Length: 99
Image (cartoon, rainbow, N blue to C red; front, top):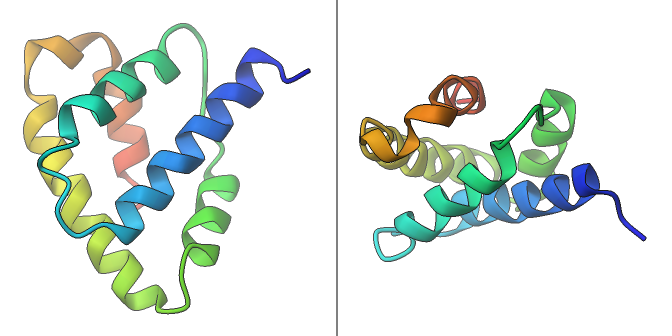
């Protein structure tokens, strides 16, 4: 049985892979923000080494993956200014530092 932290790690991995692979997430941003809020509630901390591994393994074209990830994170950053994510903003900022 997976722990709550392992569940959050797995969900964050799915989000990171999605951010690396999908060019237009405009229809999914609300769900992604909702998922990030659920992940970062409480004391959860992501692991940079794990995120880096996820990014590097997400696709053969790493340069394209990084460009797509950066664009999608910029989109999410614009949304994060919304009061709805105020409670997890510091944790999102740390996540966004990966690009």
